[in-house]
Image (spheres, rainbow, N blue to C red):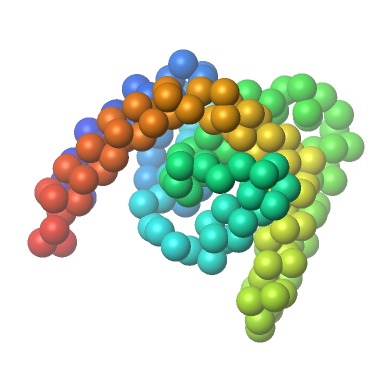
Length: 166
């Protein structure tokens, strides 16, 4: 796609101060092996709607938008991983639960079942700590987050404009 390198570079410039070394389009994920974040531009996905609702219910916080919440959640993994995962027990538990949840997600039939599994995922130790970090940072740096979003949004719009025909 046209302009993807430029978009990735622009987002990386915004998050480099948090130790993020690489940005690429994919699905929301933080990779510990190379301190990278994958992001998506897809909107209104069920998991994103549940995540926004979860954050409002659990933290009493309404973020600017799901893109910035998800971005800072992934940054939160980078910022909290070493402290949280000093214990192999915690890491093994989180991985086992993620595998279980992913397996159960494959056979869900209702929105209620999906929400239950998503909330289990959001409450895993590594996930809740990353989200708490994100919420805290976003609440205490609102102006910075707004300015960052304006710069990222500008690049996203440019990216879409270059790819309207695709």
